[in-house]
Length: 226
Image 1 (cartoon, helix red, strand yellow):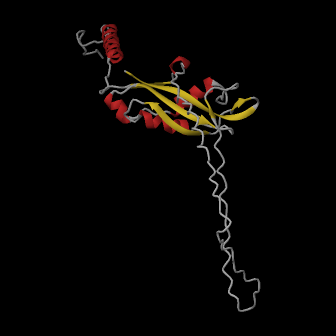
Image 2: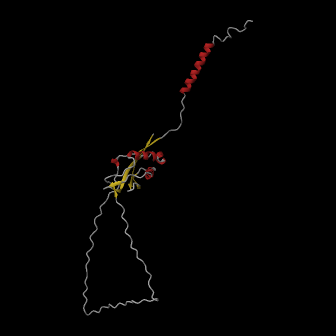
Image 3: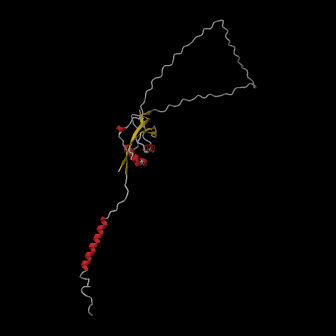
């Protein structure tokens, strides 16, 4: 039986051309897929908190003023009255030394002497052995960087700068009386105080081998980037 298929309808010779066209189309699709890029909307703000531990910027906490000595007490003058011999002195005092069951006795009211208040221990600014954060300055800076959160108000207002904080390291190493010497506002001052109060106990300062209370100053820098 003879084949009725014409030579023009035979696709076998065009097989290679169709394969090349298919490969070219597939490569074009792959290239377009690799060159496609998507862009996310909105801007990002990179916030970084740095701790400035420069000792040259530390502000002295207080100025101890020496009070002038009190004036000497006035001299007491003793006045002697000379009594004449003919003056009658009434020195008759009635004393009832007898008491019975009907004698009314006054209620006894005890008198309590007020105890003198114990003077508060002196706070030093410079001692032989200054207090230190457990683990050293590197551990202290790491603690601050991990716990300080940049306030939303300061971030939105673009507030940045250095907050100077002062506090007392007690004889047991605890941190008390945290105050701001100079702040920048925007919630940064309150954030610095909050983190300082979270600190673990320090190594207490010593004077002549004994633990003493020491005032310590710390600058904390708030910086916005981006």
